[in-house]
Length: 604
Ligand SMILES: *[C@@H]1O[C@H](CO)[C@@H](O)[C@H](O)[C@H]1NC(C)=O
Ligand SMILES: *[C@@H]1O[C@H](CO)[C@@H](O)[C@H](O)[C@H]1NC(C)=O
Ligand SMILES: *[C@@H]1O[C@H](CO)[C@@H](O)[C@H](O)[C@H]1NC(C)=O
Ligand SMILES: *[C@@H]1O[C@H](CO)[C@@H](O)[C@H](O)[C@H]1NC(C)=O
Ligand SMILES: *[C@@H]1O[C@H](CO)[C@@H](O)[C@H](O)[C@H]1NC(C)=O
Ligand SMILES: *[C@@H]1O[C@H](CO)[C@@H](O)[C@H](O)[C@H]1NC(C)=O
Image (cartoon, rainbow, N blue to C red):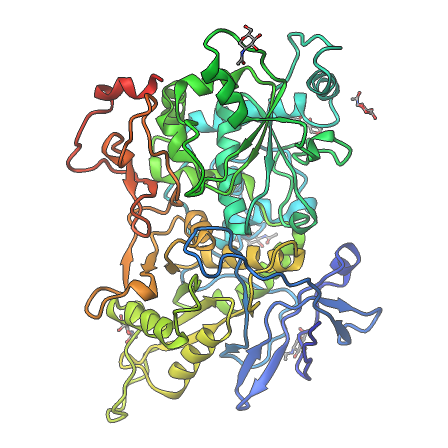
């Protein structure tokens, strides 16, 4: 348990109404320091007591579980979070209605608009047609407001993607929970012997979580795309720790697997691995199960699953229900499957926007999460000239010192002119430069934000720019099974995605979500323990897509394939993991082999 201090200068809470609906309210508590500088205590889980808005009982709950992989380089789950005092430049605020809009962030549009404007507004609200029309606004405020917080998107969804989404929504309404078709199909899936599957059968894909929130968000997006490509209905198995992070994404239906479904337990469900064994042993027809469990957690130990092969996709096609447990962004595999190739290319003519569009379609912060985001953003980030997100994730704390990380961050940001140098001589007096840059630091540890802030607070920058540093939270350890921890992680990923410039840590899926949602090509910090004295501290990525850490290693005929990037012009090796694959928009300048020359890849 942790108590957070409250101070005299508390913002008037705006959540009187909201607090009735949501148990936790975020309040930005401001502390005075040096009389003119205020500090932000970060995301806190506050309960506003009856009547008195200024009286709060602050509790932080959460069972802390250590991360199991701190010492390994395996790219496993991660959640990350931080909280830290936050500096603010203006004096106390009174923002019961935080206004948005900075010198370069779009303003909240006024309600006063002509009819052609309102069509335009609707178009913007619905993200150029990506979102369906007809959602109830109050139950998910972020869905129709998120566009106000982002620059006008250069990435438009293709008409074909929009068509596929509308078709998918129809399928989901017809076959989703609470439909007659759902009951019928599930009755067959549970007892295939007693029931006849008829023409109205629906097919399902149940996503099951693995690892931290970053892994979950990227893998869910990949799973959704797989569902669209295979005409399956996506259902999600959210535990307690995933509740109330996101809005329902599908109009007039739910994506939650009903709590009474036997599919919460996959013990009796045949596994994909044993299914493949059977298939291999028996060339003639074998019995098709009604459900299969795909343990798709690609790890070093896991053998090749040949999921990217047409033959296996043909087998899976007729299995009515798949439970998929994966922590990976396996979209590159979907691009390799010949039967999907045409569709997926039509849906995403611009290959490096797959996650961007899928995430903007699927992940709308719940009202609770949105309140955290829209309290923080206008107060600290909206009214500055540039927002710089720095996401620090230390995978090897055993061999990495804080100082090494700090040095890495500074040399990366200063060498690449993301942040100005400090005037260490203190000699010249600089004319006031009215440029303000806000740095949003996210990390499990408070040190980095504190150090950075102290630096820029005590010394003038040579450019005369003003650098403000904010770190909303620090959780010390990644936690699993903790809803509030995930809530903070989600809001921080989202806030980072609103940056103009992003610095991320190698291999971090937390950073992948931020860069992917923001459509940002981040500066990736090298692994600190791999840094050589004169090598670069960070490199700019060439795509905002998440990296698929464990792509296939074999062609479909079983032949070892060192790297699939040689066969697919839109798949490159990741900057932060050479054996990983990621989507890029442009083709390689030197295409080593045309894809068609590789037909035998798809044969077993
Ligand atoms: C807060 O808002 C009220 C009403 O708009 C105003 O009277 C008051 O001066 C404001 N307080 C501060 C600190 O800006
Ligand atoms: C709409 O805008 C016009 C001018 O742009 C202004 O005169 C009018 O008062 C506005 N109406 C409302 C309802 O804000
Ligand atoms: C589906 O079955 C459940 C009970 O298993 C029942 O409560 C529900 O009303 C059924 N839904 C429809 C649309 O038939
Ligand atoms: C969604 O539900 C609302 C309310 O029941 C209904 O008016 C609307 O037509 C539905 N939309 C679709 C696309 O089914
Ligand atoms: C091979 O297929 C037949 C049915 O065609 C089945 O009876 C037999 O059990 C299968 N063998 C294996 C090893 O799965
Ligand atoms: C402030 O400094 C930045 C970076 O050196 C520069 O681009 C900008 O033009 C300066 N602005 C003013 C008002 O001097």
